[in-house]
Length: 355
Picture 1 (cartoon, rainbow, N blue to C red):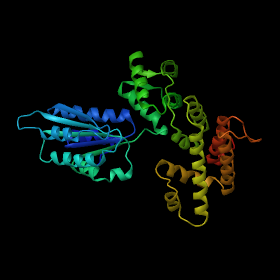
Picture 2: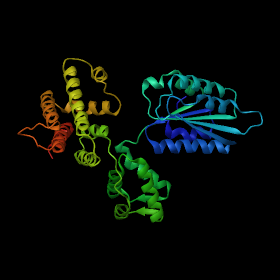
Picture 3: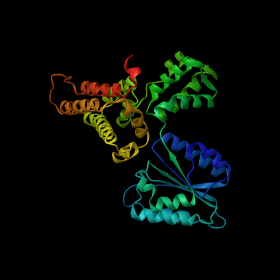
């Protein structure tokens, strides 16, 4: 059974399932979901808790099975918590997890909580994952997208009795806040809590938030492509500056930009030859948010423009590797900035390009 993260509280209010599997790449949201499950379990008499972290090939799965199978008629109800940071339990672990799922059969004194990172489709189709999900609930925990971050911040402020001013001024305040904490949700949560300590309940001004909220943004090179394809030049500039300051590899940044250009060029050509867009996207391994951005951007860009961008990406590849070109900056980061802005501008609506 699958339950959306925002439906977890309502689900728990109806009663506990014997197994909960939390998988995703956002530590704060996973931690909060796990805390909610533990709290609900404690309220229903689960007073004991055994925690196991799976690390290395020599992990003792027997101890996990023993913990789940050691309950007597008079024992306290117990949570067995399994943390698998790699998301790969291995052959022995796969079998053990299936046995753990079986241990919960007709056993209301045992609750199993499994914490996992983001899982690929193959892992979600594995026998051990299917066994856990079949006996309980899986909750996928996705990161908060940048476009949704201001609303998330506003919701968290509201929960502690605070808010920004209404209208455009308040939206600008939330955008400022989001810029300061992008890519670092745990730090964003801490900054929001700090506002509750420093200011009373009620309306917060931009000046108060500027004075309080630290710049704790962390930038992911793979999110750079999302920003570029969205045509957000100011955000792309911030991300490039942040990636450079954090010591990110120029080669990886170039690969991210070049891969999007190559895929756009390939999909555009396939569609021009009569292939349906969904098929062309699948063949080029474009899916999720990237798929939606491609669908929005492709009608705006001519094939000749993508040819020019592909040539520019080839030139920047040489610059990143130490070569020079008379029409491009010698500094690799400046060249990457120029390439990113060229692609970013090409992805914007024609009205935005003219401004």
